[in-house]
Amino acid sequence: MKQFEDLKLMPGASVQLVVVGNDQQNYSLDTVYIGSLALHSLLVAMPSPHLEVQWRSGMRLAMTVIMPTGVATLSSRIDAIGERPYSYIHLSYPQEVVFREVRGAARVKVELPAKVAKVDEGDDSSGFQSRVLDISVSGLKLATDTNIGRVGDELTIHITMYFAGIERELSLPAVIRARLANANNEDQTYANVYGVQFLPLPDEQRILLHAFVLNGLQAGSCATV
Image (cartoon, rainbow, N blue to C red; front, side, top):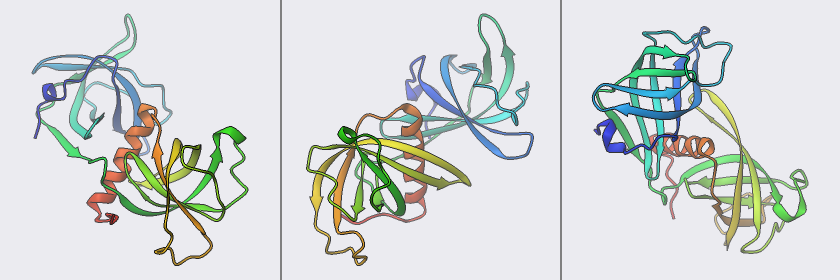
């Protein structure tokens, strides 16, 4: 276990608040970390309004923080809500932080349909079939029914992830790093397999990707090299 101060979180860092809405569903809402008073309280900016979420003092919630090597999660409650000079939430200081490490090389087996667009050819991603065979926090293995390019070509990969009962659509900028042998692909619909590396991602997408890979690793869906 870690203490919150061990995270060395800088003001302005992106975080997510996980709360239960009026419909009893969990919602993960993006916001910004403002600062903390050690062993006393945390401050975060008020997330954008959501129809099913009514913020109130005493409300229990979880906060998720993406780190370079994993995902940190902590439990807290709302002690106060401020409006000046901007809307913010005053959180109780967490007793402990759960940190789940996600190694960059750890890959999860998946079967995700994907749409792929080459950056230099516009966003025409409907012309061929493709799917993601495995995924990590740094890249993925992509199978396609056509030759999509050469090593060094940049792509945008559109996928939909399902985890924790939530559907998330991601558009991931990436670059082809290798053309892989297709000996293990029994489905001859896909004649080409590529090793793809992600380009720098927005914080929200990095958080979702880390969470997706972590869930896969916990479920035992590790991919072999």
